[in-house]
Image (cartoon, helix red, strand yellow):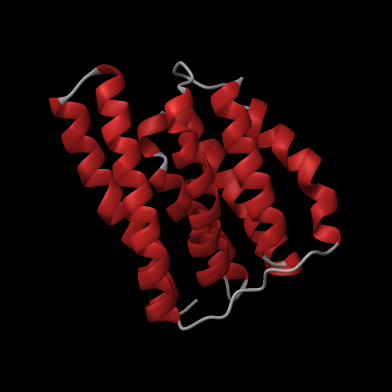
Length: 172
């Protein structure tokens, strides 16, 4: 893993986490969630563009047999652990954008060797720190599994898994 890949992985948490903390400490309820979702969407889109400029990587987005893993991974990501807060349909755009952008950043731009698979899993986990310690740890594990899938098959399977899982977690 080189410095550019690592730096790309910390951009999103550096943009999102301090802003989430500020919003959650100043605003309560659905309004806070809506503001944070806008921050997350903007941060993820900015990070995709910055990551592309920093790493200069081309992404492998192709249909392949890695999509066979989709149902198993969706089940793991959607139902374990259960959502800790009520579902809100207005965060659906953030779930979709998040699934695509996080896969581009963490599994597309960051992965170059086996070490980077573990590092991106941990950094992706930190992005979800406000969801509770159990979800944070679960996210690290899932991130590492998705990292190995992306390393072998590219990011289309992981994007598909991530987006469908996010949507199901929101609507269920």
